[in-house]
Amino acid sequence: MDSPAFEHDPIKVYENGRLDENWDGTEDDDDNDNEFQLNEKYFFKAAKKDDGKLYAYVDKRMTVNELKNHLVPYIHIPSNFIILNRYKSDTNLIMEELALPSSSLEDLNYSDTIQISIGQALCDGEYRGTIFWPEPLDQTQTVMKKMFDWIITVGTSVLDTKKELLTKLKITQNIDIPLERCRLRKKKEDALMRCYFNEEIWNEDIGQGWEMVILDLKDRCELELNKTKRLLFVNHVEEHGLQQRLISEMEFVVDIASTTSANTQLATEISKKLNIPEDKLELGYMYGHSTDIIWKTSVSNWSFSLSDDNTILFCRNGCIDLTNKETPNKWQRAKRKEHSLRIQTVNND
Image 1 (cartoon, rainbow, N blue to C red):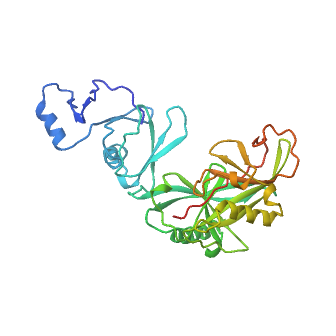
Image 2 (image 1 turned 60 degrees about the horizontal axis):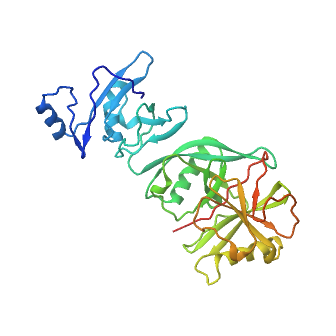
Image 3 (image 1 turned 90 degrees about the vertical axis):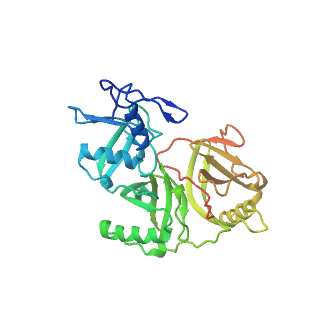
């Protein structure tokens, strides 16, 4: 809803949390003003224009549910079927869904555009997101195909969500995955992040607009980890100058309750799997949106969080002579067609 000026617009004036302006535009009508505050009614003024848009002024203190109720007479859709998506002012990209009925409109900006659509409106504690399916293009490339939107309810288990998703996949996409081989991983842009395990319970951290990839582990069952175990994903790469090649993504489980440090556990397991001496093994990571790999040349210098979803882990053989390396511990990733996988550590607490 864009907000051009209306004739005789009232001016909203707040002082110490109190409404001082008479919303009816009548300076001397104190009775109306008092009635407005006693009934806790929020200002709403709207009009339809020739371009098909509904232009409105709204009081940002009202809730999403109250805004929907105000819109019903204009759009003739029951409020529980109204979906509101907020667009960035200068683009056509959806910034967020105004989802939780009890949340306020405080984050809205003047002239924000709200798209109104028909669908299943969310209740408090529900979070809407998107499920993706990996579809290989060739031996080196995989695209994430959008399958459908889904609603997760806080307090339900990952296991229950998997069961519902698998039923939906089988009915709508003819994809049949046994429950024990099903894995859910967080998706962030083009990257695969943490795993969601069966015993986990969804909470508010899932956030609106979440994205997940559903995977078939094919030749094995999903892991069952207790609260002291962490599943780590590590990319094994080879580098020659500024060129790098992703060889494989590996999984390792470490026990944070062990007397042996998680770093040492991880180094031992990687060394054993790749047949690289531990003193020659280098671990690298990228953080957030950085395109740099920060390399650590000794286990004692490895510094990464076991619960940080934004950490991307890589490993390499430090014995290989790398040419054109700009610095000993930092390397700029060369651009290439295939995407690298984001690597994370899982916190099951």
